[in-house]
Image (cartoon, rainbow, N blue to C red; front, side, top):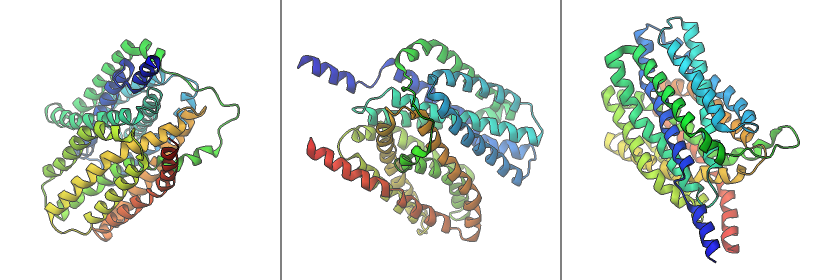
Amino acid sequence: MQNNAELKSNDLKIWTFSFSALIFIAVLVSMCVSVIIPAMPIIMKQENFSYSFITYTFVGLIVGRFISSNMVGLLLDKHLPHKILVCAFVLHTITMCIFAFVRSEIVFVFLRFLEGIFEGVVAVTLQIMVIALSKTENRGRKMGIFSSSYGLGFIIGPAIGGTVLQLAGPKGVFLSVAILMVLGLIWLGLIYNALAKDMTVPVPAKKSFDLEFLKYLPLYGGAILQRGLFVSFSILLPLFLVDYFKLQPYQVGFYFTSSAIITTILMPLTGRLADEAYRTRIVVSAILVMGLSIIGFGLVTNQKLFTLLFLIETTAFSFMVPASMKIFGDQVDKHPRRGQIIGTTSSSREILNVILIFCLVPLYQYKVRLPWIILGFSSLLLAIPYLYAGRQDVVVEKTL
């Protein structure tokens, strides 16, 4: 009895050294990404790049993410994730140093492509690591803490980017990211042996990869929705708040900051709920609230009501992410092609992003409210696979 209690206690343990080290890496990565996000449009404007060129740079970024998300999954089934992180950090350090001095549009697009390579690699690799460093009993909590760490980075990063851009210009922004990457490399060197002890590579599959990943794609809907809303809100929210509600550009930042603060605070708590029964009900309920709130964005005419719906949507989002990622992580944890499955499902998000980039602005120009309504109804559809998964939860609970 005592041994069983000790085993259960170990299963529920959250803050191991390797997991703590992973959370620091996640915060650092999200800081590096969020330093660039608010500064990049301003930098390109200062360099007199055209608006059509700005679109090309975003396409280059997403193409890089799509390719690397697919390719890195193959590597992760053969090599330990922290080795791949070291290579990704070195690449990003070099990319940022070149960014600081380039003025050619062609080279700029290529560097954005390399930036996308980095983002795709770390996105898949960190997902693999948090799944590998968690167990079914505590995966929801660890997913919540992991997702929260990204929110923390997105709170800190834009403040660094804006300050550095003001004090040192575009060159300073890129070099500051390079410095963060060097710190990341030093940190990886310090924790390398600890990660090597805790990380494992799945037993290789006997046959080559096929379209089996499609079976897991529906239960990756939460992550697809997470990334799709991030891209959509980045495009639509500033335009809508400035054009429709006549807000000042600096006021738009309050919405993004408040969203990051809410998710950072709530996700470690909502992740605990995901480890309890009926987690799929949490996902379905959260997606329904999110979808209806987003539809409401396009229907309300009062800014205060819009803000209330935005806060409700953000809160529901904080419940949805850890629970949906736990469901997916439990499905693929022991699969011999875990890396390939996560890589290919992750790349599906980038296909969606390309569609969103080319569709949202024309829809917005046609009718300001229309993109919100379409986005909301599309979000609701992603709840359907979890309705079926929820039936399985009920069966498991009855057998227990």
